[in-house]
Structure formats: structure tokens, C-alpha cells
Image (cartoon, rainbow, N blue to C red; front, side):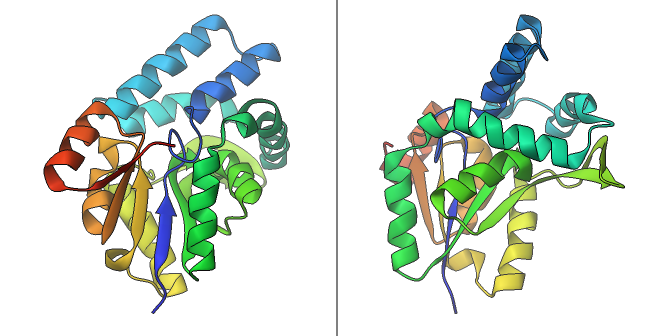
Length: 216
């Protein structure tokens, strides 16, 4: 059976929160205000701390995409990646990806972001598989809603399990790299949890449980 290496994206493979970087990109293009940026930072902070209703926040955030054509967002995310994200991709993350690939492991990004945001990162690092939050699309246009479950908390396990069933690996035999305590459900499920640039709560837990800690 194949083994898998699963990588969170924000503050793991990428040093920054990509949601905030996207709003900065929008602001520079005149598509968002400083208030929008402040709201994004506030939501991301709550999301990271696990003290927010993630589906409710996602629903509010996705309203801006209602009526937008899917290909338009794909093009915008490709441009945004080059201008705002690529410089923050961790070199040690790239090394870890290459190491697992050389070992013959299945490599995947598992992120709460959408596949439109994660796709450019995956392509840049040569990662074939992306497990992410899905947006509802009808006739090539976003409805402004997401498809449950979000790839967050236990939703990450459900969505990763779909990939595992399709590719033939066991989550219980996988390695998972993450920075956040909100990923605890998946960290506890895998064989090898690796805490990368961990937030304070995850760092305390990692020390208590003897989990590997890396700084990228």
C-alpha cells in the first residue's frame, strides 16, 4: 500500500496566510478597501484560534464571488500567486516535498483554502493532489456558496479520506505537516504528525506528546 505525505498550506508550505494576501492583492487592484483587509485579518485570526464559526465566516467571505465566472477567478489566482504568494513559499517545505516524492510517497496539499488558491502553490511545488474547500459552481459561475464540509477540522479528515479511497493509501499510515491546533483531528489520525512553525497551543501539545517540531 502507498504511503502519503499531507501538507497544510498557510503558515506551513507558505509562510503567510494566503487569504490575507489575496485581500491585499484585491486592495492594490482597487477591488477591496482597508476595511476589507482589516476584516480579513480579524477572520483569519479567529479561524486560526478555532474560536469562530468557520462555515458562517466562509459564507460571508464567499458572497463577493457570487456571479463571478470560474475561469476569471482561476486567472486572477494565477496572477496573485506570482505577485503575492510565490515569494513566501518555504524552501524547506519544497525540500520536504521532494524528499517524500523521492521515497515514492503520494504527496498532497490539505488546506482549508479553496483549490483556486491552493492550485498555483501545488503546481509550483509539483504537487499533484489538492484537498481543499470546494465552491459551488453552476454553468461556470459561482453561486457564492461552498460545498459542505469545509476542509477544516474534522472536515479535513472527511475530504482526505475521499482522496485516500481513490488513491489507495491509509490516513493512519500518513505523515501530516501543519502549523495549527485547528488541524488536531487530522494530526491525531496520522502515523506521523509534524508541527511546522506551530502556533503556541500546538507547540505546547507537541512537546507534551513528543511530536516532531520543525521551523521552516
